[in-house]
Amino acid sequence: MQDKNPAVVVYCASSSEIDKAYINAAERLGVLLAENNMTCITGAGKQGLMGTLNDSVLKNGGKVKGIIPGFMVDAGWCHENLTETIITETIHERKAQMAHLSDAAIALPGGIGTLEELSEIITWKQLGLFKNPVVLLNTNNYYDPLLKFFESMIQQKFMNPDYSKLLQIASSPEDVINILNNNLNWNPSFTKYHKKEL
Image 1 (cartoon, rainbow, N blue to C red):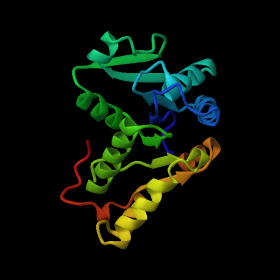
Image 2 (cartoon, one colour; image 1 turned 45 degrees about the horizontal axis):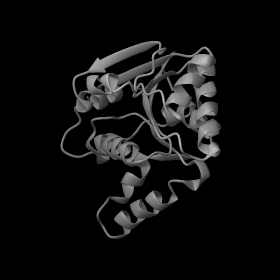
Image 3 (cartoon, rainbow, N blue to C red; image 1 turned 135 degrees about the vertical axis):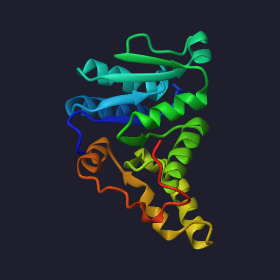
Image 4 (tube, one colour; image 1 turned 120 degrees about the vertical axis):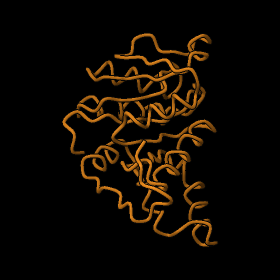
């Protein structure tokens, strides 16, 4: 990535009842983000992979910017020791700010919320609203069924084959960092409708 101190948004699970392999990968990614001076932007949660990632980045001297809607703060979900916490009125504002402030997006394994965030950022990239790298960390081949579904979309003409380039796949946290450090800018020639950035 070209910026001296780039910021990356990471979408990930808040569930704590998951296999240790996913937790280990989140911890390792946190170490690598800190070592590479990449500010980590998350949803400011303190549980699951999000909490693990936040703790790992901070423990290793990195910076975490958390963005969270007020109702989640009121529910006690907010991490209390982040470098910076931004509180929004709605979850829609939260997602828009997360994307606007980031130089790349990473999706770790997660549930329906993570899938929704991943789908939205891919759609924004397709539309030319987000022009930065989108990386999927496919720990334990978690996302293989989703990737096969994307292939089916292309085969059945619901998605342009060129859109397979919207997403880059990493099998390890180290792969994620390599992709971010050696990314090719998205060619906006295939974007739809307009090219105005967020």
